[in-house]
Length: 132
Length: 253
Image 1 (cartoon, rainbow over the protein chains, first blue to last red):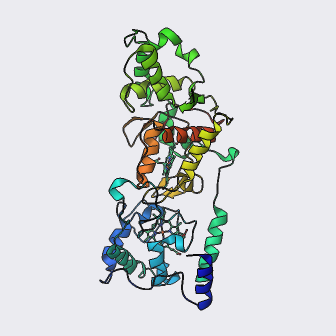
Image 2 (image 1 turned 180 degrees about the horizontal axis):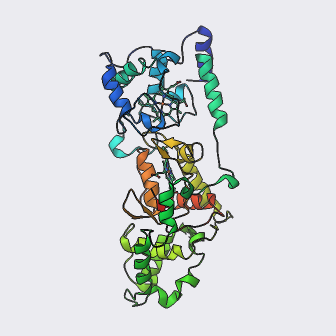
């Protein structure tokens, strides 16, 4: 989006900072979402984040603690930060979980695939909104 | 929330750490636990000892169609190889060669033997043995008209986001060193101790193997061993660590 478009949206009061609509038809499942977040090969979230996972000894501290994220951000704001966090912060180190363009030298086995599927994003989201 | 996000964006932009000031550089050694450091410090417990002994044997063994040993041309490694590893990758002809490539060039041209494969036991042993002769010496890579284009290319690679996870080396090693990546402290990525004995590998490995691990971690396609990109990246890292002391053979977790 150009900065002008951003300013116009801003003035119009539209929320450039969120994706309000679900990415998939089915409603996300918080239990499945929790498992994805905790899994080092699937969600990879705990590489960088901490969260309420007493069973996971090794968690990261490059990113905000996930506790309370459901009160800090709306559902749409969290969805945007999973899909493409650079839209909230262009400098962010957090990977885009649902984006396949604009990447360099992706390993062949991952090429053309997002880190998580639309269903998985909705599962993760359904879990994150419970973290009040 | 919008205002908060904008504020956060501005905040993060100005806390991007960028290049580490020379005086704040730390070897990976300093990020290790006490036991791993002790293992590196004591020659008799350092698991790389066996590679050094193999390397010494290879140094003295006549080989190839020329039937000559490294020692036949270079004599005592403790003298002739002192300081060599501290200035590699070095420009040979028109491009930088790393130490492994330099050793293989001698094998092919002088010994008329086959080059050792990357990560072979022999190449790691001989490289570790040669680099051991520079232990304690400061890394001596200079940026000048000849080296600068290659250093700059390596830096560009280091700062470029790559892979499905879209991460640049600099985002971890310049901006977030000292923090914890899933419980592992992120070091500053100084190539001070290579080849290393890595506990996770249960084996010796080269700097390129370590770099490939980080690329694979970002889900990027790693560059081939000995490719120009890899050697430029090594050269940039060595220049970035200029003045720091070589520790070869280091132990790393």
